Amino acid sequence: MSPRSVKRNKGKNGRARLIPRGKEDKFVITKIGRRNLRWIDFYVRLLAASWQQLIFLFVLSFISINSLFATIYCFLENGIENARAGTFLDYFFFSVQTMSTVGYGKMVPVTVFANVVVTIEIMIGILFIAVVTGLVFSKFSRPTARVLFSNIAVIQKYYSKPHLMFRLANERDNRIVEARLEAVLLKKETSPEGHQTRRFYDLHLLRHRVPILQLSWTIMHPIDERSPLYGVTMETLKEWDAEIIVSLSGIDETFSQTIYARHSYIADDIIYGASFVDVIKRREEDNGIEVDLNLFHDIRHIE
Image (cartoon, rainbow, N blue to C red; front, side, top):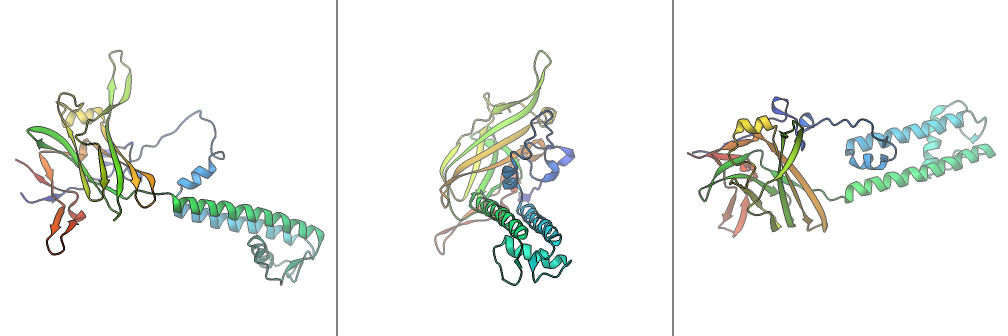
């Protein structure tokens, strides 16, 4: 049969994921009664922020600090030489020159109190630039994974046994060495005493590690008597509110640092009786290998 591409809607039927694929299908977690860590972990929050948020916060902080000192300079009578009295922009740009330590020399402090304010602003400016520099360096130097997971998982026969399969690929041209993958089933269950809980069950994989991940890797979980998926139907998975969580770790060959990637599959992402379309082809003209990621999510139905 001809292959077809399967794309799952994010947050289908309002189903939130522990490992979200987008903002709309993310669990909203509210922790009541915890300590207020907003300012204690402020640096960590900044590292986790997006580049757009970080740039916006930098511009807002820069303008706010300079506006504050410009207001102070406005109240210093004849404190800044060559600054037009009552002209906020002159004092604002003088503050910018002071904080950045540019100092063009046209406007200079002439009173003792003005020099004290300038000294305080320079110290704040040095700390501000140091923090921003550290944040930018940390975000640039932090290694990130570019791993592509298949949108769906399939269940098909392999050596006469049903297997749950999904695949992943390294989108970069470098290698991920000592790549390891773990898969768990998260489901809701009720104990004999009536306690409701969410439990993790390990999914045994035919191969959980590869020495080098550069092309693609198909993960296979045999659904046998040891599997928590043995004898389970799609309706049961939905009743369990089940989610299969996969976690990949490895060492980026370029950075020589550990990287991580995560993905998840819910019941709507699993297709019975299907197989993935092959994406790897060998080129005879240059003895190379071609990985067609345009077909990465395509499947074929099996009779």
